Image 1: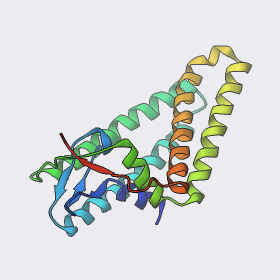
Image 2: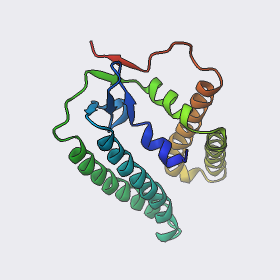
Image 3: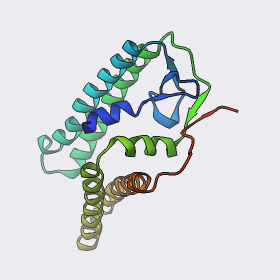
Length: 186
């Protein structure tokens, strides 16, 4: 399974009764019961296309904006906002009319689902990339303390790469026995 397919599939899960539930905002929002496999495949297709376009676009905008770091950050933030708005608009169309699920999706379940679908050849480089990014940020701060703002932006991003990759590697190597991924709301 490709990286983008794994990202797309992790937004759709089976509920306690076997129904397909779409969580457009992951563990941070409501889930919607998808009535048919055809509708679920349409959602997966949208998500794959979105991720294949959105993630590389944000990376591609960096060299296009020139060497000024502040300008790069502004361009990435603007593009991320536009892409989020586009995602929200399309996700809203996909869930219109679908019943809301009384099942919640935990962050733990999100990582376990992703870990089961992503190979080590993706998780290990993600961990190493986060470590390299954080190391470069610290080096930049030590070398030029006036660049503290860029370090304050890069450090949490690098740390999130490392924490999520570490958590998924842990879930992949030592899966929790009988753990519940989805739980009914109380």
